[in-house]
Amino acid sequence: MSKTSKDKRVEVYKDHRAQLLLSKFLSGELNKLEPIYNTKYGYRYPIVEKITGDVQSANEFLKHLFEVGILQRELFDKIVRCLHCGSANVSVHYSCPYCKSFKVNKSSLVEHVPCGYIDTEEKFQKKDKLVCPKCRKELTKLDVDYRKAGAWCTCNECDKSFDIPVFSHLCRDCHQDFTFGEAIYEDVFSYSLSEDVVREAALGWILIAPIKEFLESRGFEVESPGFLKGKSGTNHMFDLVASRGGKDQKVTALDLAASTGNAVSEQVVIAMFAKVYDVAPDKACLVAIPKMSKNGSKLAELYKIKVIEAKNQKEAIKALKEGIKE
Image (cartoon, rainbow, N blue to C red; front, side, top):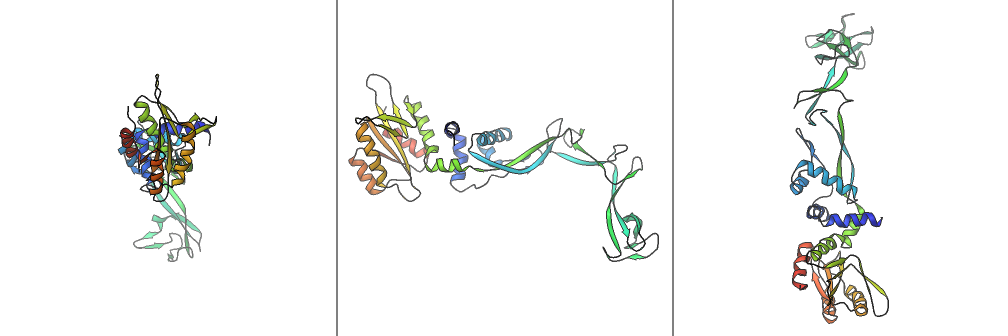
């Protein structure tokens, strides 16, 4: 995974629309996003349209999420659109290769195996029976005494017969004819969450992005990840370092820890304290997802590390508003 791709995703994570869609994937509400067919628009993504506002922006939004590596996609279907108006409300015409009329009747060819006579099924039809026009014998067993020998077409316009028609399209909206060569032939995709994003979600990157944006809106200069040099001469990395300019520059170091269990272990607090002790920032914050263990909370209080428990970005931002004084 390249740093450039990751940086692009981090920027997208700031988008509230992306946060809403990703939350549906990460919560298990949505496993795979599949389109739903609509006669006017073609395929649509109603869940995404509720987030973005309309059909066009939903498609552009999904394309962008795929391009930055947030979503992966696979071919779901292909769709034909009108050359003239872009509508997906298109019918297929089987036309006469001689006069191009679509007034064509399609019949099945029947072969009477014993005598070898072949003609359209209508020629064999005698009331509710099939009778050979040549030898007058009744056809009773398919694939034994007779078989279907393909299709046969007759044009009602020029009366010519043929086996393979010409394909064309008619737009039901603007009533224009066009050929396959002229048609807009589009790929339609289903989408799922990429493995990179699943890993980044576990590491908290999806939460870091909106926190970074919030702090910047409050006048902080923010680096993520951020590095601070300690008294020992060692550069320590934090998930986020925020500072304000001026003579009395205040520096806040923030780490984020997520647990797939009930609570974040106290080991995370111990590890952060080792960095904080050497660096001595003005404020140290630890965002715990979904919450901090009891032992971890006691250690954090002892080490003067502000713990912010949050299940989502809204809770984290709310706690930061209270915890970081301007």
